[in-house]
Image (cartoon, rainbow, N blue to C red; front, side, top):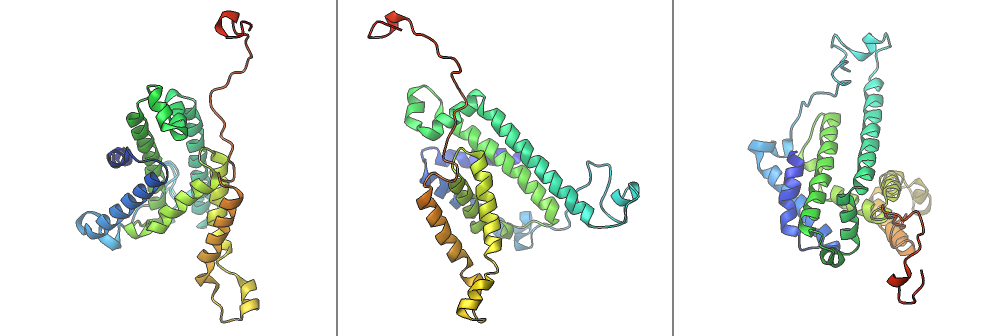
Length: 269
């Protein structure tokens, strides 16, 4: 609820912006908030952040703390291991991601979801149809920030520590790049772009084959982001609308119906 509230508050100053300018201003707001939290030490702890965040439990029934009486491994007579906690977190975030995708698909079929789609395609046409673009934009900001708040809560619980330094400008830029690269309006495309962006940067972290060409003194990490940036430019030239550029509408006419003759100029249906 707090994240949704701040999404609405930050949405008001950017209501008149659209397209690339909207993305740039939202990135700027993210950087402003990060700097404010770093300097507001009484509230956020500054760069030290918030530590000692309790571990996630299995829906309050079992704990993954070895010393806890309701330890997961002891309850199911399993060997003590820290892997259970990681496996549980993996399936938990997978479940939350699937739930988010399901809710998003359902929202797209509601009137507010169709208003979002229309606003994305043409704001002027939306105004001409009588759609309240202000409320439509603010609901999009609020719901998007709400899901971001869910993800941030999971991140804090997973890490056991959260700091403003965990959300630098590069993190926001990567998220925007994922959306643009995957194709706006395509959930499958965004998922593919996320795999390519996050997995690709990790694969390029160790460019051992370049050491063979340039010698052992070559440090591949210095050129990792440069090579990845060039690859992104190449992909955007090849696929300017993203990996999955097809945008499927949520409203369909499944049956072809004849139109009355008096409604058409030619006089036949």
